[in-house]
Length: 304
Image (tube, rainbow, N blue to C red; front, side, top):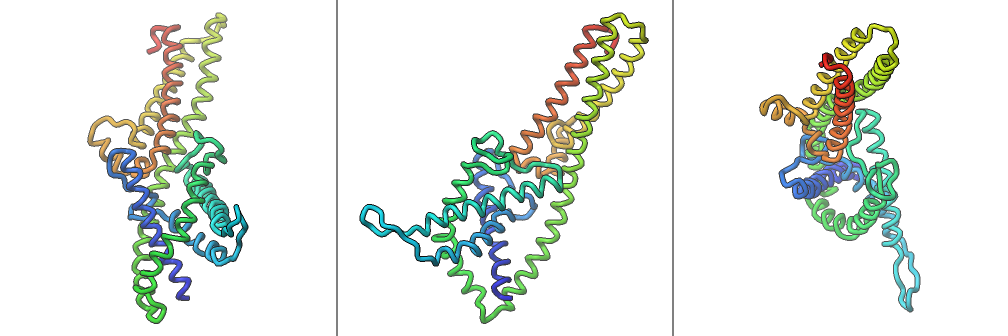
């Protein structure tokens, strides 16, 4: 029971440590302070999960006696084994975390599609190498260093101290997770709007093509009536598109709206890559609407 509780503590401890490191890294890159993470609190659970997985699976490997003779010297192969096993473990955690979150919330929180040797944009070779190096550093430096202090603060002889501490932390964590899921569901709702807009665009483009072809071919139909109908559809889509932009904090009618949107959609701002890809999707929809508008405006000056 105590060892299990200790691993739960390591989960929270390394989640906080990971949040600190990543928030500093992202804040420097963005030039402003960023609360990095899915949760509101100072936690990045993926780091805590990865640390616990590494600790559990790599500790037995670290105890192995595995060596080879290289240039006349006996060299341990254990760090090499830790590098590759740690790499695989971390990639597995990262891949399935991305997959599960995308299935639940219809959103991609990080994307390595632009990096070489990636798998579905969820993991890539560059970050895999980082994870391998991090595994060695973690097992030989980071984990032993912090463990030496943690076992003194929470000795096995006094388990109650650890249990009480974890009880308080778990309560706060559960509240934060509930709030984070609510925010993520808001994101899912906005993503669903994007998909709906995309489907509507396919239909609009098809109708536009038919109307335009009919006018050019002098087909005897009430073209103006159809164009007016198309104009109404496009206006509605433009309004929906603008609402989605505002929802994502990418466009606002006023500074107040912009501030409120930024506050209500923190996840949009702590994952710059996700925000960038969403903006590209929305801009693409906006461009298509403008293209249809331009095409028919040239052909029928009274349409707009």
